[in-house]
Length: 248
Image (cartoon, rainbow, N blue to C red; front, side, top):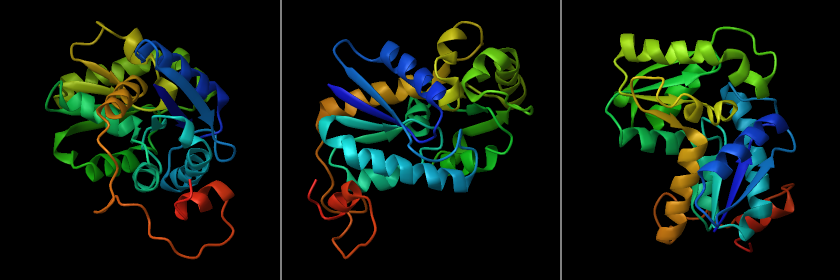
């Protein structure tokens, strides 16, 4: 099995975190490929940045999906996921969707621990879009500058753990989701140190992608996730144009 993980931001250090956790989490024999956005921002924390990241992810997915059994949007917030699910002939999931799916199997009330205060409103909207707003106990986030996005875990591990403990003690969380690719692998490091289960987006997405590919459920030809209708287009990258023309 071959999985394609797309980092929709430009940080190679984050792609390395994604790659390391994905390889640790994958089943024996699963091949992992991580691609980094060719344009965009260092890390995504706003709706507009997510829009840019979604287009970068779409471009990479259009160019490379044919060689893989499933695609993962490897950023919390899942920029572009639902659009890619319409267009690609293979299963697509993302860090948020997969982490929430895992969390729902472990408890009722879910708290998300994030790296930025600004990110919270957008994350809340994403959770609500998945129909899980009523399961969300809280979103707690760091409130300090990030010197290096690839070093967030090392520089802020104690603060992130403290936020998770507060989510359990004060918000009633049954499960903690550590949000974002910069935190990939932190759940593994914190195993046994928190009083509730802790979920990682990258490991969840890899395992769910493997399951979806193995199930071979087929692709939508009707309904809201049917491929986009063929129509004139202009100025698009060739791979995206081929997807829209159903020539991929």
